[in-house]
Amino acid sequence: MINLCTVSDNNYLLKGLTLYESLKKHSKDFILHYLCIDEESYTSLKSFECASLKVYSVDSLIQKDPLLLNLKNSEYKYFCWSLASYFSNYLLLKGNSITYIDSDIYFHDNIEVILNEMGSRDVGIFRHRQFPLSTYRPEGLYNVGVVHFKNTQLGISVSNWWTDAVLNKKYPQLATCGDQKYLDNFPNLCPKDSIYLDENIGHGAPWLWQLYEFISPTKIIWENQEQNLIFTHFSQFQFNGDSYIPSLMHHIYTPLDEYKNNINLKIIYDEYFTNLKLTQSLYKL
Image (cartoon, rainbow, N blue to C red):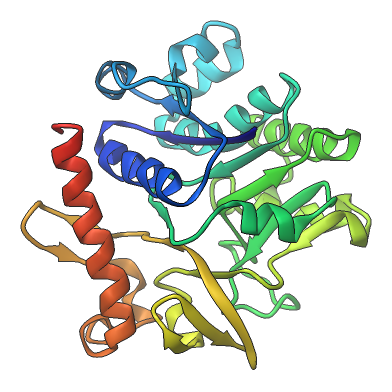
C-alpha cells in the first residue's frame, strides 16, 4: 500500500480533491491521508472518507503538541507552512513510508513511476530546475511540492530534522521561505546514494515551463533528456468556475501569453481546468 499525504484549508479543498481524483485515475493501492487545517474543510471532506482517503483534523495534532498550538496562535501563516513536515513526520512515525504532495499538484501518470525511480533511496526531493545547484536562492533549490521519506532509520532521521527545524525556527540561514529552503540541507544529511534529487522524472510548474521543449503534452525535453511529464504543480492557478488564470506571480518565468500560444501548455492547463470543474460537480462543492 502506498501512503501519501497532503494538507489544505477550505480554500484549497477543490484542488486537493482534484489531486485525489488524479491519483485515482492513474494509481492503485494508495491511501491519501488528508489533513484539514480548518473546520470547514474537515466537515466537507469527512463524509467522503473511504479506503483510499483518510481525513484528519488539525485539531487532533494541536491537542497533543503545545508547540503547534502556540505557533497557530502566534503566526498562523507560518503554522500552515509547518504542517507539511509535521504531518509527514506524524505519519512516518506510525510505521509506513510516506510521500508528501502539495494539494495543488495534479498527476498525469501513476505515482509508482516516481517511487520506482527512487528505488531503495531513503529520501526524495525535486529541484527548482531553473536554478543551478551551485547558486544561493532564498526560496531554496528544491520544491516542497513532492517530498518522499522511506520508513528507514535515515528517512526518519531526515524527517525528524526537517520537522524540528521548521517547528522551532532553527538555522536562520534556511528560514527564508517557510519550510522550503530547509530542503537544501537534505543532501548534507544523506549519503549520495541514499537521496533522490529529481533526475529522470519530468515535472511541470509555472517556473519550469520555459526550460522545456515539448514533444507532446505529456513528454518534455530538459537538458537534452526526454522525460515523461508525471505531475504538474499548478501554483497560483486561479479558478472561478467559468474561467481560469494559469499563473499570477510566476509569469516572470513563463510569460502569460505562452499559456495560450503553446498548444501543449494550453492542453495541460485546459485539462486541469476541466478536471477542477468535474471535481466540483462530483463532490458538490
